[in-house]
Amino acid sequence: MARFTFRPVRPIVAVAAFAALATLPLAAQMATTHESVDNEAVYKIKDEGIQRSQVMNLLSWMTDVHGGRLTGSPNYKTAADWAAKTFTEWGLANVKQEPFEFGQGWTNDRFSMHVVEPNRYSVIAYPKAWTAGTNGPVTADAVLALMDSEADFAKFKGTLAGKVVLIQPLREVKAAFEPLATRYTAKELDDLSMIEEPGRPRRAFTPGAFQFAAKRTEFLKAEGVLAVLEASRIGDGGTVFVQGGGSRNPKDAQALPQVVMAVEHYGRIFRTLEKKVPVKIELDIANTFHTADLNSYNIVAEIPGTDKTKSAEIVMVGGHFDGWHAGTGATDNAAGSAVMMEAIRILKTSGLKMKRTVRIGLWGGEEQGLLGSRAYAKQHFADRETMKTLPDYDKFSSYFNVDNGTGAIRGVYLQGNEAVAPIFRAWMQPLRSLGMTHLTPRNTGGTDHLAFDAIGLPGFQFIQDEVEYDTRTHHSNMDTYERVQAGDMIKNAVIVATFVYHAANRDDLLPRKPKPAPQPAGQRGPGTFGGM
Image (cartoon, rainbow, N blue to C red; front, top):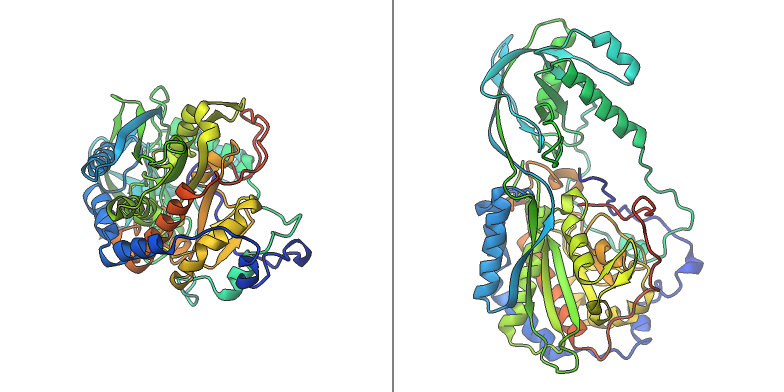
């Protein structure tokens, strides 16, 4: 997973006293605002976006042609070049690729793995990013080396050299009696619209577990282990969830070869070894570390505003452009990037006039901790550690983000900025037929809107149906074009374009929360990490 990931959690019933407005019927909520809605513009957006959509073609270019787009890899850069070229062909202005510090890139050039004794069979598996290869085909004995604490190191000292080591116990694999794909029910959306219950426990992180895993890796490397095998942390049926296992810093030593396997194949090897039957594994892993350019790049383009007094003001859309390497980064997050590109195309092609400048940002390094969007926010708006602001800070209206997979947009997370609620409710009215009906004051984390929210700028992530995001596609080998739902993508681009159009043309900038205090590194609260 990315450095730290906060996934949107299923809502629980909250304290009604804190949510009276959110529980009003939509018509009653609408009565609280006189926000104007340009229905003629919405018609044009729907007509272009639904009748002549290009969103799935954009998605195919990102996924089928350019692959997983791991940040720092050559295919990320070729994908970024393609996006910039596409923006230029559309006639967008100020198209550029803005660099930010990242570290070394990595690609897996070749991978094969077979069990060769006691009988021969292939397995489904993938190497972790930023780990070393085997320098050609190798065959070695597999061994179980389960360690729960540093005290266990002594049991294996001097016994693991040249071995392929299984380090995880077996996990239970249950039949899939529940559907892998889900959409929000009406009740779930109603519950989500309520303020989260005060004092609700949040997911806790255990630094000790990370520290022990690092020490275990150091021990295995010192012992001369050939490679480390793990079962996919979740999933079954050949789905493998795999992320990173080494360092982006070119000065650091390369990590051991590390491989994540389909749980069924890991289990077969594990149970064979438990029976004291020797298992030999043949591995051939060729990985390349790319050090010529230690930067990555955000891709940025604009539709300039048409109003002399407001054209310097900015409305932004974006999503992260990078993905992981086992799949093609389709639902995470070519889907969001394609929706945002399509929303910009709709606005440009429709010829709609927008007073403010509309800018798109496709971010790199999200999976490693929102690196691209945070660098962009610091370079253009404010340094969150000091809260020293730049001129464009006061000209910024809003940022809209998509990064929860392929699911249909059902509403907006307001990040506690409830002053925008009546505005968004008005904009949602002509979008109800597309399924967008709810707002929640709650925060959601793990993606690039946080880079803007952290410095006090209005940044929003849309509520989306989960579909198969957590169960099948998120950071997995099954994150491919086939898992993306075309109907949802088409509607999502129309919704985003409608919100952007109205934000760009309203009389005032969107309301903001109070400006936050400086947030020195190491003193940031929950929800500030990445990525999805």
